[in-house]
Length: 366
Ligand SMILES: Cc1ncc(COP(=O)(O)O)c(C=O)c1O
Image (cartoon, rainbow, N blue to C red; front, side, top):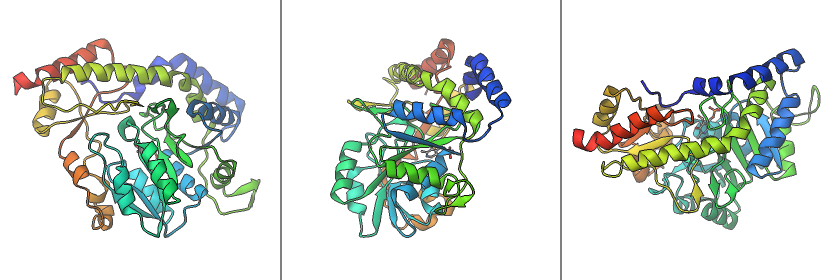
């Protein structure tokens, strides 16, 4: 079967460099928050085009620590989408804030600026736009609305390393932005990892305190924090892989354009490309009216598919309480149709042809 993602293929591609980097960490004797973390933070901040980066344990912690560090407090309302990984919403409620789920734009699949405006109350403190599947949300309009209403922005960039709006990389628009380095991401570690970026020295200071018990001086907590440290092994892996993200994203877009071409007469809708926005193609998700039939057809040809996700957050049992306020027509319609196809930079030309041929032949086969 051609998988939808293959982190092992990426390890094998960089095996010599990664093995050497791991050896250096293992024999170096510093395993948590050492020189590799510092160097990675510096290089990742440059990559995003911001002043500061703080490494943390995963992309979920990155959101909750970012929210606390920009000033969100328990009881504050935070507007985000239901069309996201559950992590976005889990992170908001983990700090006692109230997730308010709004609808997406049909074109981008990302948070609708007009839906944000309509959901603002006197309790609203922040917005978490998610650059879903690697598609940049409309940050220009979102920043405008948030400025008008004095709202904080934490961008969830877990799926969008290197995506751009114009020349600006996502993660550089908000007060802070969170990243995940889960192994399948566009920049993936060999375990869990995350980071938060910001241009504010005050926020950066809060981030550093909060990821390690509020310690300014070792063992003395100046504020309450928790443990969300990035370890040296993951930072060393990320340092090796960071120089390849741009090229890998170009390869992802190249594969996407081959799939798009194959889908032309199929009646299946490919991911929308929006002029002026560079999609990072983390996931290649199409919309298909006869989804189960289509998935079986691909499966019979040795092509794996997945669902990102099987249900939007407000329709999952743990978050049923959020559904009363969530009138999410576009989101709910989308979830009837989405199918994720294989997308990772190590797909070889033969695998791409197998997928493309199957897509092109879907119409005549059905
Ligand atoms: C949109 C989004 N936000 C947050 C996360 C959380 O990242 P992590 O799995 O590193 O905690 C993910 C990863 O699954 C994600 O896709």
